[in-house]
Amino acid sequence: MTEVALEAASPHAPLVIQQMLDKLAIKYVEVPEHLAKDAECKVQAVLLADAVGALMVLFPQSQLLDLNRLAELTGRKLTAVPLDRVAKMLGKHQLAVLPGLPILTSSPCLYDEQLMRQPTLLISSGEPGVLLELSTEDFRKMLTKGSAGSFGEPLSKIRPNLDRPADDGKEIIQAVQNFTARRIQQRLESTIEIPPLAETAQKIIKLRVDPNATIDDITGVVETDPALAAQVVSWAASPYYASPGKIRSVEDAISRVLGFDLVINLALGLALGKTLSLPKDHPQHATPYWHQSIYVAAVIEGLTRAMPRANRPEAGLTYLAGLLHNFGYLLLAHVFPPHFSLICRHLEVNPHLQHDFVEQHLLGISREQMGAWLMRYWDMPEELSNALRFQHDPHYTGEHAAYANLVCLSIRLLRGRGIGAGGDQEIPQALLDRLELSREKAEEVVTKVLEAEALLRELALQFH
Image (cartoon, rainbow, N blue to C red; front, side):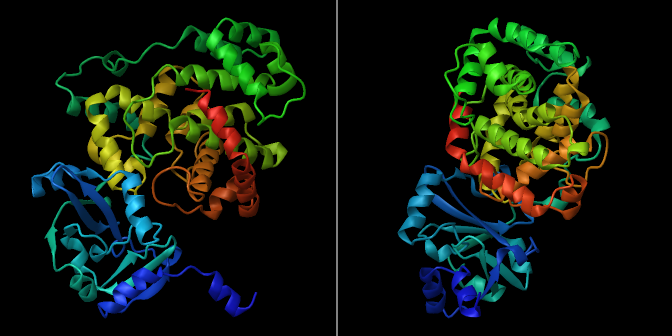
């Protein structure tokens, strides 16, 4: 490709932004976002609102925006502006993302004073993948109607527990103590009111560990649960599996299309997923719970098949880990109902962060700790609890590492394609090496899955 062609293919700041900055005589340099590593210099912009009106808030990406501190500072109960309103505003200027430019909106601006301590700043240009580097003095010119304050929590002070699973029980107890008036003196499982496992799930778990279990056995269990039976049949009949002929029964679905291994893990994922109901509240930008679960499970299924046959982990169990990877989200909503809304609002105003920073800051624990603890409490396979517990640690090499590594890789691959929430995270070569996968092969798997995105969405709807 010629240099001229490369130049044309590279994204640039939108013309409206260029003209706006030129009019103010502000000098800037375009910087590819993937080359900008210093979070202290990167400006995160969010648009908040209440009954009084809108407010643009600017803070460094090295911080978490704390809505409680913001309320103390402003005397207002601000939340993120609905995404459709933001999109409509950006559409007028033909922008794809919100730039950190107060002059773009007529709203007042509040900025964290920590920004002014950097010699240069990087702001979003309005075009994905392109940042604008400008001096802090030039940035200050755009803040003539802005107010300074201190309302962020440095990420360096928030340490999600990624590597101390032995502390999970103690930290969950502490979190519950902090958020309830109760004084906990009994065991954790007596304190947190977790629904008992459904009878169907208990039967499926017994079949999973029975080496002599047959298709007749799982067919019998599924058929005793009418809702589950209907979903298994409709799953098999889905265009995603392109099965020849009509699916007439559960046995037909299992023997001709899905197979024993997939059905037993799919049925278990369905049974466990329905033990806790989906919360009514959720962050605006979040991928729906079951959509995210199905996408991750489908990518893991493809990655597992792409691994060398001799070193593949159990395929059905990796698929189940994908289905249940975000189970801790349901548990957080169940255990902390009055505070779950607060978590959602903080996730909305911190789109640059993984959820574990927000949860650690507000609760002292993460959904991954909660989900893994519940898997152990329900006597689920250790591979599954470890997959949930260490899914955000790309360097995990402990017991059953392949399961956690596959979930981690799948989440990050999908995030790179705009599915899931939180900032983009790099995929270390060491993670790919442990799974014996090339980067090209991993991306190929995701591409293939997303080609069937419409069919996957149909499957996800069956879980509701």
